[in-house]
Picture 1 (cartoon, rainbow, N blue to C red):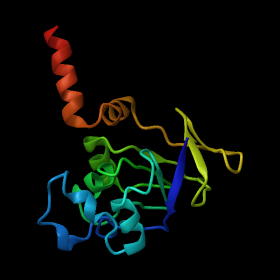
Picture 2 (cartoon, rainbow, N blue to C red):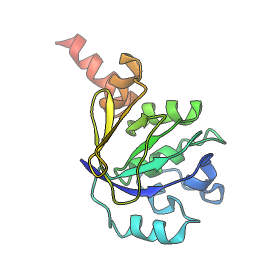
Picture 3 (tube, rainbow, N blue to C red):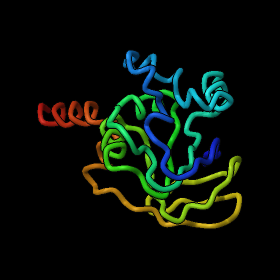
Picture 4 (cartoon, rainbow, N blue to C red):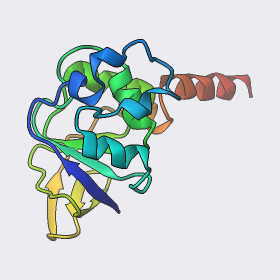
Length: 164
């Protein structure tokens, strides 16, 4: 189980997640400091490591819309958070899979800050309210890449397996 650390509205853009003025910073080790930089209170808590690993960001429709900037995913992965959203933009979803950021599409998710969520294979269970929500399952290949930690670790593991 993990706690919801922020509940966001619809159409959260990659510029909200990782503002464009920081695009000169691209190293995954450096991008996390700029996560949600314009949401100063939340950014300060992230930088202070006030949240447990695996904590959850809940989003509405079209999470990660906007540009194709990969840093929006790497900045969140750097904080070891997961995203549960009603829908996720196509490019943000693929970038998340490629980088191994845990994302879950859950069209009917109902959660508030502080709620405890459990992500199962098919559902998201809000342990605080007792409600269960269906998730949209990713195709097995995409889920495998995400679960492996991203495209590079997935490919590396597959190559090593063929050498054995």
